[in-house]
Length: 164
Image (cartoon, rainbow, N blue to C red; front, top):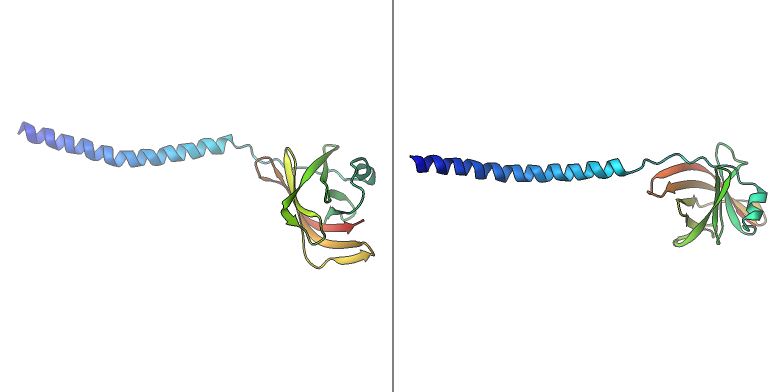
């Protein structure tokens, strides 16, 4: 009788260990996911300042480029994309980004992506630009700026004026 009680008790202990282990593994995975989520810094919205001709000249970015203006303010340049660099201005400071030739060229001949230390941007141009002058074409465009985590910090539709 004593043997039966011990065997039944042992069977119950083993059964409990088998089911609980899988549940514990799930809770460990969930705990790890929660820790990783809590350590991620949320994206802060990036506020862009207008880029003037003087800024472009000081950055050495004269020549062929695409300048981006948001749809809400079509006369205010917020980003510049050339074969040599990308530029944005935030907090009164010009931020220079390196072109990413592996991202491919846009329809206008500038690169699609630019990378910096804290941010990166993508300037996506749509096909079918409208010629505005002999060496200038305007394209519908989308500017997306990501922070160092890859989260979107700025995004806007607008127009890109590409030329010399």
